[in-house]
Length: 153
Image 1 (tube, helix red, strand yellow):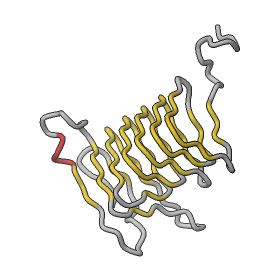
Image 2: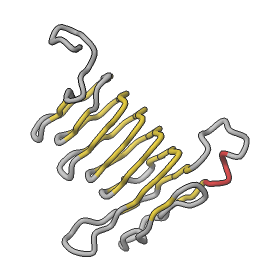
Image 3: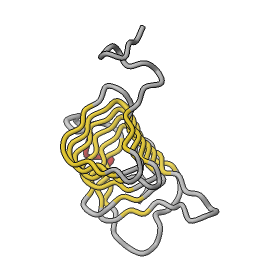
């Protein structure tokens, strides 16, 4: 059972960074974080969702990352689902990566100069085999899904 005085996080609890809010520093949460505003710094949470209006820049350690917004920095995650933009000099390490594109509207995934590591986590003997490097250009990244052994970009 949960309580409102520091008990275990319930299934409906989440930390919300609302649009118009900017946070700089270190943020750690045992419940999911939803970012509609902007976070710059270090972040650790079991689940991170970044809305289309949201941005996360910094060093992030997360179990699940879903982003429709802007990412920049270094991201370590088990599962990543992208449908937003990834800025230059960004590193994403994930066991699984899903990239979603919409054919209608203006939603698209844009990769700058980024490094994607998909599959085995760093330190595993074959971790380097899935490394891909994207090049910055004006064209959107090709569509599709990447799993172990492949990545879009």
